[in-house]
Image (cartoon, rainbow, N blue to C red; front, side, top):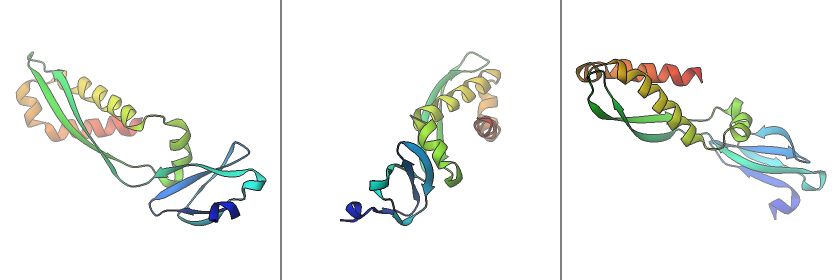
Length: 135
């Protein structure tokens, strides 16, 4: 009944993306909103604002020619102010993050020996974080 009248409920920790006649208009915050479909308004999707976790396993080679598997756990979330960009510009968020993390790990670990990798785990994590922030 609510959709018939143009009422839309947006749940906590998510936002809704609103379009008018196919053109992006704005992001709707959690709560109840009036989206009159008879005037061309509609909700085209939702963006989850919760923290999500991505577990990765990256195989790479060290400076001393030892092959190893690096386990990484990435936590990410969409920022409310950029939810429109996240909805329209990202098609496979998890895949894109995985590719960036793999690139970062594979650019750092081959410069280190196996012992250095174990000793500098925190430095590697910080470097991966810095490379992700630049993207």
